[in-house]
Image: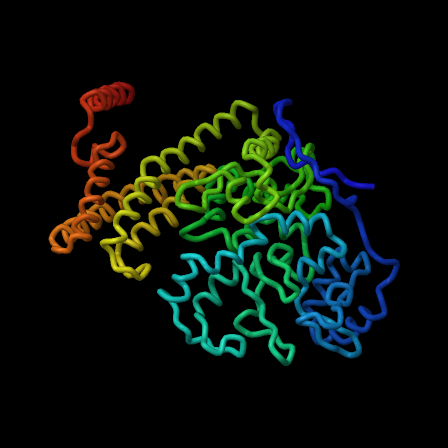
Amino acid sequence: MARITRIVCIVSGTAATWTVAGPVAGPQGFPTLSDKSKACVECHKPTDPGIYQQWGESRHYRANVGCYECHKAAQGEPDAFEHFGSNIAIIVSPKDCGTCHQHETDEFLASHHAKAGRILGSLDNRLAEVVEGNRGLVTPGFPHGNSAAAVNGCWQCHGSVVKVLDDGELDPATWPNTGIGRINPDGSEGSCSACHARHAFSAAQAREPDNCGKCHMGPDHPQKEIFYESKHGIAYVAHKDKLRMDKPKWIVGEDYYHAPTCATCHMSATKDQPVTHDVGMRISWNNRPPVSVRPEVSDAKLGLPGKDVPWTARRDNMKNVCLNCHDTQWVDNFYVQYDALIELYAEKFAKPGLALMALAKPLMKPAAFSNKLDFIWFELWHHEGRRARHGAAMMGPDYTHWHGTYEIARNFYTEMIPELQELVLHGMESGYPEKVAAAKALNAKLREVLESPNHRWYENKMSPEETKRREQEAKEFKARYK
């Protein structure tokens, strides 16, 4: 018998559907605890009482799934070692979890979460490895050294490539690590314990907003802070004790209705959708890059099956969640507001910024982040630009405006434009024909941007029609509140 997972919910009655067959969800386990796991418990109960107690509170314990069932390893596996007559491995990978949880594992492996480790060769990691760090952390797996900033920072969320040393030990630069995109010795990507923490593997903990906040916080993706600012977060704090997050069956609108958590919107079941471990199946914009893209575009770049699921279908999935608490007009109007912010940011700042930076490159020092302009532009899209977009996506007005669009505008006009003008001036005066040509090209684009409707206010060139309209609106405001 197979369970049919509906990737796309029919909200309006007209949406298409994609289906994936999966095993029936339900309790799995064994009649008794295996002799090998009993032997593990006998030794580890007195030496690791915390682990024993966590396991004792878990559903694994009630299903007689013990230490050996999760940690057993085949002969020849990279991280396997002989331990009192059994081959075991310290790391429990998604491949191991998939022995019992195949459907959930397949969904997870098809998601961006499992691919988070691939960011480690990106611009972000150059910051941690070179600009912030050095090669001072020398380990057997990294005889030439590595950056402690990357190891303790980037890798702990995105995941490290776990290295097994010749003696079977795990390299200390790469372990401990529960980064969600960890590359495991068995070749699998991901870490189930990033969300389902050892050794209770609690669903209730995974449903907590703070669980997601280990990674989704800070200057560049402050989803945790935005959530707590939003009405959703306010309702969660006020009514957390009524949400029944410890229940195996947890359907919004049926088992709880006072407030959502991150899991509610992005993963958990509704009356029409099952739980999903692919967090991209309910988002209709990917707001990570300088200019937002539709999620199927980013899925295609990673070779994920989601490339075949259009953003409209994913939006219907999210609307299906929203409609458990809000009416159709409310939900539809929210998306009008959200899409408008995405377009504003892209058209006014991101696309012009990308074009200007491309033309500025020949006039800059070649090493990445050796120019002030590198940092200005990076923070403009990577920090402020993301904050504005994420703030709008999660209805956090302060993050959308004061931590978002305000800081984008301030840094665009008072930092980026003056730096570009300085580059033009130096290029023109350099005496080198190629730099003069590059300066002229940059200046032409800069003039085009500043004279466009979005930016002409900067040089006091707002159109008479727009000036008159704003004066009239000011009069109406004063009349309304006199």
